Length: 150
Image: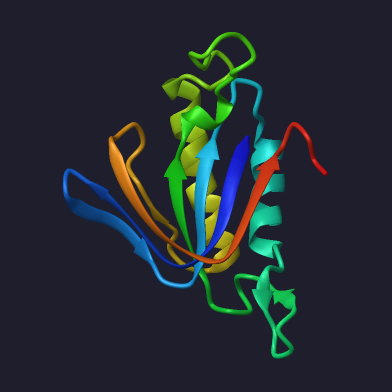
């Protein structure tokens, strides 16, 4: 799994002109699921995201996590994160999970994150043409790849 985690002041996602997910302070997360991802990868990634200390404390240091700031998550499916540009100029998406695997993993990630945060996780609609508005804070953007747990 690959997640692009952006610290935001606010974020929203629209499908066909209607807002389907919206948050204030928190993380906008673009999530890509690969064919090789496991439940263990999902749990590791969820724990990593919820525990990221990238919010400022009283001294202005990035020392607080989502729970400390009562932050939220807007989770957006993004299979193109698994795109390979190794050959030519047209990305290959053969590493991206097919919907029959990706959808249950995406739904499980929503559930796990919601349990960890103790609140609803906002989300887009899997496979839909989405318009995402992000008010980056910082900006702070991290790419977390379960295939490269560093």
